[in-house]
Length: 151
Image (tube, rainbow, N blue to C red):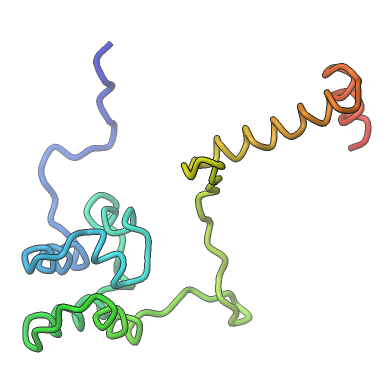
């Protein structure tokens, strides 16, 4: 079966936002999207969203300063660039002024060292419940009924 076509995709190439343009210039200077993400202390998928979802406006001042440091100062050290960017990046805050909570991907690290996302975490929870059923000696249907009644 061929892949479905995406809806709401413009036919023409739209102009990149400023964060994407600055990230492009950093990439031309030899940095990868992963490096840029480390510099601004965010996930690499956010840097990709500069291009696809028009995100990144909050990082424009930091990216400008980093680009200036790279082009004029010749600074290439990632921790030093991250320090420069940190002075120009602010985390979102709640109305009370506390740091806003960010939804992150639930990651489960298995004993073999591999990591899985939300599905793996759910499966781990399910396996734990199944082990509890087996250990208690009741059938899975009795366990489900018991759980439903206890809520």
